[in-house]
Length: 298
Image (cartoon, rainbow, N blue to C red; front, side, top):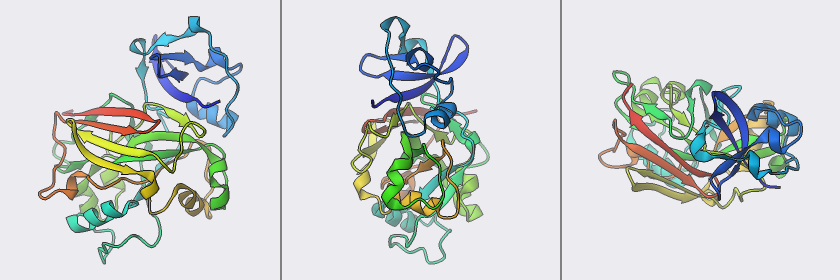
């Protein structure tokens, strides 16, 4: 059965839960599935892409107002794999902005192959967590709403035709970026990896919960809609990304692939509209919930 899986804190402990979003409650996974582990990573390693049968006892339910939702995978095992310039309109706005120094030609055309970079796992925070404005380090913070793909069955040399068999589920991600650092270092890792720069959540929808090729992706800053697109507009679709990444590199259960952001990021405006302390960023993706984070000073 389809599931929405969460990581939550309750009574001082961090646990894995199955979300009942309609009724605003969460069930401890261990109370629903015999032998279920207490962490998302262990769950993925144990069950892979299969979803076990579960039974739900209303007496075991906990109200969402009683728990704190964390990032579904609070401490990813290795860097998050991310794809740059994967919506054509965003590729164009990025090229026009002057901040993209990764490509000497600065071509406004679609990339010939997926542009892949990583974010440090230490950048991950959960829904409702603060994005800390890095005073004295960057003055050009940006937002990027993205669909994240969670690998459930690892592998190397995965063919695009088989790729979806390796997907555990999907999660909303905000790929926060320091544009000035991204330009300065001519490589994106530092500008993408500052602490708190990867809000993720609120849940992972198992692969049978959503249609990954028809997801509306939206992002608001202070209730102003900035980004709106659909995953059907991806230049390189999810099977292509999995095939590309697994060609020579073994993907592992729990790996996360951020698939790219649509047009409408701060650098796309003239003049640019960067995030400031006090701003609220809200990412909403069909079936993946809403990811809301405030920008605060340290």
